[in-house]
Image 1: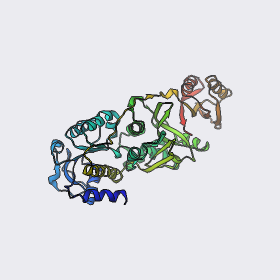
Image 2: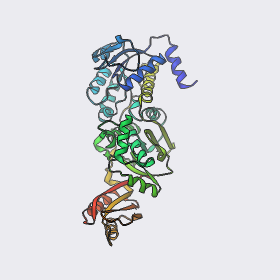
Image 3: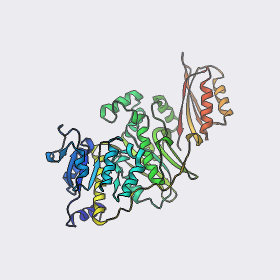
Image 4: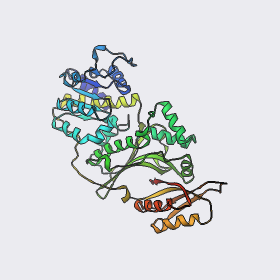
Length: 434
């Protein structure tokens, strides 16, 4: 029997009352969730709480379900599961902790809250013998959290590469496929509703950092604090970088990365060159993908829409049904998340890697020799060079691909090179993930 049908039988065939659900947040995802609940009829919707209960939504509901008083939802004993969909840290944290302490299970899509206060929330759930599910917090409709929880317990996952922010991926895809500038692609993303008017959470890498913090915490059973994650956005990427990367056989993608290296955890977010033949290279537009590598699982990739009303609402509903099915047949919560390790974290400067570097230099004899000399002095060898033709005025680009080198040496060399009078603009470094 398929898993979905088995869950329906468990929910419908026991003769017990339906599980009561209270939703906090009547926005886009909340609206989508209500549509699914009405269609599936597997749980009973008790409340919908929001500060705005008068604006029309694209779903018909009984107005008696609406309330602006969140305490009615949190304290009503007929509500078994609270779904938090307001986002942000506060007051969402307060609502979730209150729900857990009231012995109510919780479903949330709140990546920022879990990334910054996940240990407290998970411990509170454990102390009160209730579930907290959060599939929609990473990857929208991609079932990566359940897979990591249920399918890979005995597997040793050594690395994660993720494209987990649809906005950044859309922008770089448009730059690559449509030859748009960064600003033009960002404006288009905002026009489609993929990016906010202030898109800094996306393009500065913060959203991806929240998600890789959650993923790496689950995989490695350790607390991963945001301050230990190196975060770099995509604003430095130009159309020229996209084109030079293509000449070299690479595409540029916004990656979230976690690697286990000799019992030390390396977690970072930054744009990177990946080979055109890599599975992640073809993930375009607003799609997300999480690529895993492990000793026993080999290589595996999860792919799908990383955002949108119905994919995300479906992930939330799946969490609700998962809890509803378990509570019908279990009295003891057995699989809450816990962080029983405290792994040491690697600094970004401790990594060894290859780099793409774009210099903007004056076009005169001896420039390449000066740059190469400083790189050599810092133990960095050059794999390839692209030097464009002379222009009538201004700087010309010099593109170098390095062999593997210590990041701290690369940073030292670039600081020295950028102080030369032959360099007209700050050099651009993009890491290579082969």
